[in-house]
View 1 (spheres, one colour):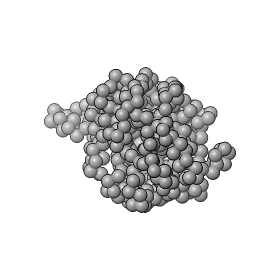
View 2 (spheres, helix red, strand yellow):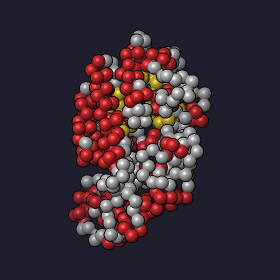
View 3 (cartoon, one colour):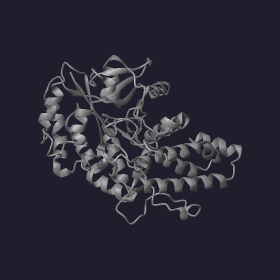
Length: 414
């Protein structure tokens, strides 16, 4: 019996504006919120909301009402939730309506959609805690399953997640890790006793996320009955099919005229036509299924690009220079107790900033250009480093807080 586990990522960064060297020590507003271009943060959010978030949540609400067996899960970056609250509260309400059905799970991640786990375990823990508090305040749910930024995962992360009390964690079903094994079972991370690993079935996930509208694809057009047949064919050879996708697949990456909303609307019905098929959330999958072996991820794996590693964010000297300088400021930034400064520093950790600096313009080039406000990776690097220099000046100019303020700052998550 294959249980289908749908998980959707919801994230948009707060992009940095073209911050010049002359702006250093003169302009502390780094974010591309009021630019007249179509790539300012608010305009992008409104565009994505109208094309994806609002129609897709409406479709999912219909499906949850139509099919009592249907279940889904989401992870939201804290960054996108902040933007919903500021610019489009109607989108937040739409997601809250989904959660009220009782058949939508929300997963944990880093608040700032950051690479903190790779560079500062203390900052990673702080951001996960801030994120879970935000989720609980907005949705009344305390996450039990962890999904790290961009599905970045290794053995050390599984250990940390277990220590933090999560019962499950998501990862990419990378071929070089699985080898002869199937992603359609649950596994135990190497050396762990309590936590279980759910692996993305990237072939079926990518059929929807990337190939759906491609007329050059041999399986075009992809219909709900055809996809349901592929799911049902796993009967006897798997227990859970993890379909992990960017939520913007629906309406933004795959436009409405491709038929993606019709496909989504029909898919649960087609899957449920097979009596052995059902839907589960990640937590339910963890509770329902035993592990079928132990897996080791000695090096970091992600769901990005053809390599499925961290090279999208950390493959060239610009990216390494930027991120090392950023985390090199950690202790001094936090000691200031300045909440605005700390918030700005944390927003600079968002992985997208380093993604825009990527120089891998081959098979993955079009993906890296998506909603990218910069003409070149070098422009992204220059703006980022100028901002970072301004942050450093603010740190140096900040008066040291007294012990009482430091305690309050620590208690609030700084």
